[in-house]
Length: 602
Ligand SMILES: Nc1nc2c(ncn2[C@@H]2O[C@H](COP(=O)(O)OP(=O)(O)OP(=O)(O)O)[C@@H](O)[C@H]2O)c(=O)[nH]1
Ligand SMILES: [Mg+2]
Image (cartoon, rainbow, N blue to C red; front, side):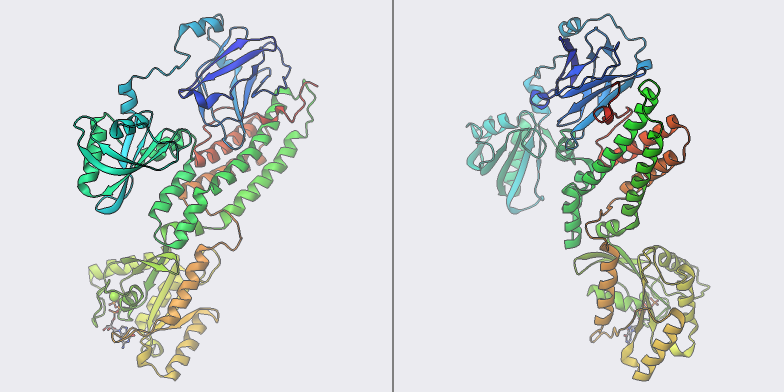
């Protein structure tokens, strides 16, 4: 929490913000106009202020993290109410506004100097050592269990002292590895010989003081060092504690933290690439760019509401902003139109193996995964439930599902299995429909029923991206003649058209031939993950998609609105939806960027 106060000067009021860690807010000084004038101050200082007949705004530039303003006092001694100031680290601009009506009831007679002397505003570093110890966390950052080297990480104000207590030497120079003996701080028992890395905050992952102890990865060594840290009064980190601190200190935004978690969980190279893109701030940059554009539009609309009559702002402003907002809608829809490619790459492409009983679905799943994941038997109706297994196909993650054979049955359990199969046909990304090649030409009722179910769920075989997302597999080719194959192709093409991909497979236990299917499947999986539009944004989380969709809805309502005040609210709502993606913007406030661009009062 930071505190703000002002000091009267010849130019107006200088705004001070005092952060818990004083280094953070050196840049936050600036000028606040007295609320009796509507003249806009253009200042080269870090804060601009503008007074309108019902709104007040403070603009902060070059901020490095989100701050919380408790009280702002202007030169007349008027205390402004508590509000959040959210800053965009790289966007360089943030706004703090409030409506004057909300100021009613606030003590306007208390002077800035009284506030100063009242204490509690200068948040000087007064934490006790105990407090510093408890707010410093430690954890084993590498995987638990035996290993060559394990890394124990510490973060917080007491991290440096803890290193000195364990090594009985001065902490190493920042970012230089130092070999040190670790000793128990009380008993002096040797715990290990460790490599120590020291990161002085804010130049660390969490933004706090951080130390990494690279110790030998034996269980007893790790347990001994962790116990010593606990004895020093440090707290054991909760899951995600380090990332949470990085977020609160403005080191990572919500999307970058999600990217980090994805990177740790990435099993395939495509997942890794996607996670690195997100961790690199791709989503943040897109969101920041969109928010900046919306902010400009909102500022124009607000300026029109506040100053339209007094300052002769052209009435076309509203119409012009509708054009800008329509451009925004188009751009966000372009991101959304790429479909669920990002989510598929992150969570795995859902591939379902479906078809009539005994066609060889389970045999095919086992051949693809190269293990006996599903039970195979000559008895039709062997598979009853959906059997899922994970597969890495050319670097892309696939969730492969074997399903019950589709047929009419009086067996209640099998009927439930058939219902689940049909459901899976509708919900998966790619369908692999396995047919018994020896029975395909004999008007086999089960094959027909399976194909009909496929058609019913997916009328023309095309998925949400307009791709033909069904691969037809003719299995048991070892029992088929060349003529049988030609007849099978003709029959399937008659039903599904000539573009339907058809693969021939054999899953005999003495050697499966599935290469044709593997090629088709790899192609389909890649296509369902990779974006046709190079460099386009990959949406990896459902919550991002939902926020973007809600943002578009609000923007559409803005465009359709005839009332400028209501439209302004919609725009504010749109910004808030996008702000939720990065976690950076918690606006209840009106953003007002345009004071620099709009020459109000000229
Ligand atoms: N000759 C030959 N037999 C196969 C082939 N694929 C599967 N089979 C046999 O066909 C029978 C059924 O195989 P499954 O894999 O259990 O068939 P399924 O489609 O999973 O059957 P349900 O689970 O009952 O729906 C088994 O006896 C397999 O050994 C193949 O390519 N060639
Ligand atoms: Mg089966």
